[in-house]
Length: 394
Image (cartoon, rainbow, N blue to C red; front, top):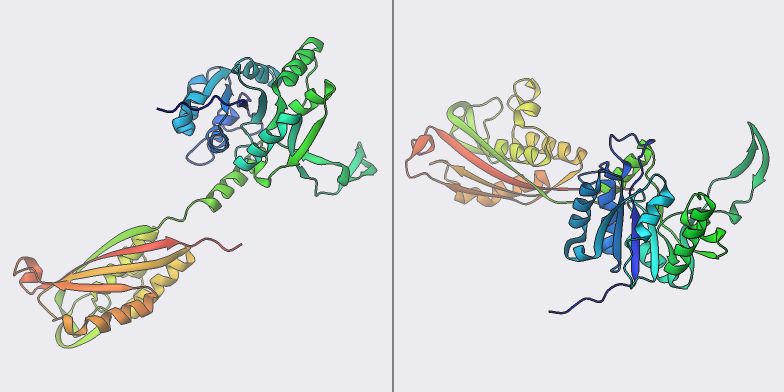
């Protein structure tokens, strides 16, 4: 068994904040974005970057929750992770993380869990640059800025000289530890680690940050994160199933699979009794989570009385498109002793596929005289449909 080398880089993930402005009912890092917490998403990004010791600084009482999130995100890198308890201030929390560094670590990154969507590429860029000194990721300031005195503009601010700081911020370990000792001795609190490092006389350089590295502070920030994750989620196909039965005994001609069958006994129903079309509609609506045929085409909708398959299927296709779904394919089987279907199979499949804009296959079978289809009392149909979410246009 090969032994992985001990990394010389560590990432301290600060997750000890209370999140008062977010007001999420828990410390900020443990508020859910989607099925996962802010902390979990931050750790997913950290473990997707190059291997490093990962230290999560958790609020008192949440160490167990942080350990669970760490283990789930780490996977087979779980031996690289540890959880420590944070302090009353951010600097105290980072200091707790520094105290847990392995002896082989020479480069330290300090990362806010609240910047949960920071791309792994940014983390790696900071880790590389921090071997030569202090470094932070930044974004250019795009807003027009003004210096104000009370409610009066005092001066314009040249935004070309400004940058918005992000995390992780990276530093040589020895220099950062010494800078923290100096700040602690002086009793001085800084807004971020770069300011503390610079106050100790060290230069801090910048690398390119990311728009996804924004800090989740307010409910609006949380909603932004949710939209970004939803937009980047894989568009997985969905499957639905529909069944329908109709008894023989209707007026007029038999309509089945979108075709008229002269000389065959009609099926009874609110519309034309086309059990194949109706099963397809239910399968498609079910796959898209849009209810069922009764909701959209039942007796409460008299405009569909006597309507044929083309009307039902075209409207169903419109409903799916409006909900953001494309039809993948549909497979249908009907059970009955009549009509004899094989001679018109191709015709039926072309008609149904044309209306839906997707492949439809139809098969037919008898039941060897069993049940109501076998006794010639009616027809039973089952349909399976595949639909695919369509990425929204931007």
